[in-house]
Length: 110
Image (cartoon, rainbow, N blue to C red; front, side):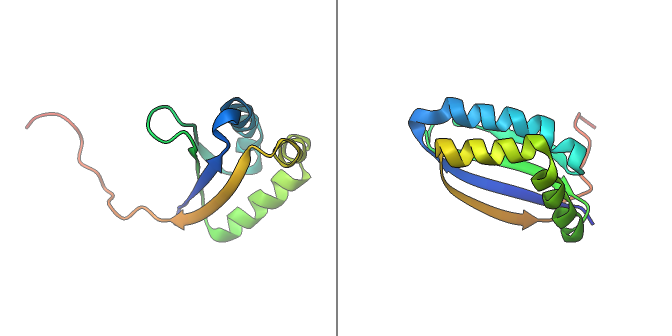
């Protein structure tokens, strides 16, 4: 069963560029560690402080292995340190959800 992790970030609205750099690095670091990265999403319109990260893992056990891999990777360690040092993330909440609406209908007219 695939589990999707949604990370909700509260970020400093004056440091969106730092969050974007953080997200780009995760785009390189996450896939080799075993998660299927959907993406990181930064404010565009509306809230200037809410951002998201979304990825899929096969299970919560796979999530634990993925987190260990990130902590051991050079890119992961540097990115964690970048966020700690620059302090652009004010709050981070994580939730794990499973897809329950599948299968989805195909688009088009009948």
